[in-house]
Image (cartoon, rainbow, N blue to C red; front, side):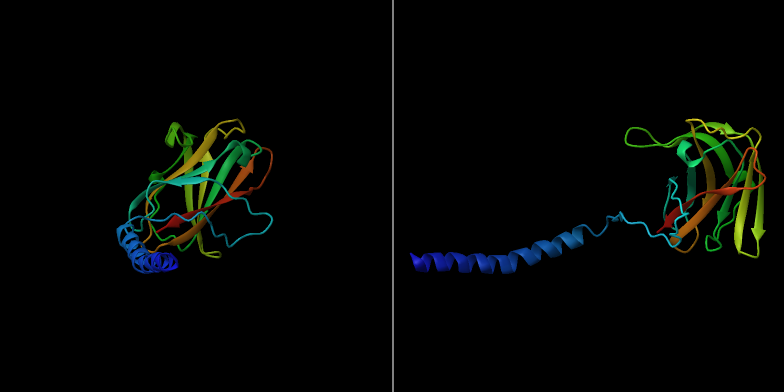
Length: 193
């Protein structure tokens, strides 16, 4: 009886030694084509004044045409906004035209709906290259102020993704009504694979 039990445990050890590595190796080869999305986001500007904003992009591969939605939800803005500034990092090397930038009232997608613009907001756009901080600044002037209502708005940028992959941190500033200067609204960290 003891010999049978030793033989069975020996067989399980041999089976475990041979079978499990082959299963593990086969799963590595078959699941190689799927991308793994990390649940961790790296921020290099983590001071107490940093505010993370929501965003959505259609395509994350490098050198592809992309449509990026930079969301301004009701909790992201405390007052009506007369102007919104979007700073683009110098490492995000792509051509940005004023025709490919828009502002709209947006439906933020989720499980049952997709992200789409509901109503376009007429705007004037000014694109500046700031050589002192080596960033592009896009000044967006809506013809009517962005209200601090329960509606969500989005800055929509249509551009080709850069040739290099990485993390790109965009910052936004807004000028509320009654104030002479812009204040920090938050930041978006875009991932290009």
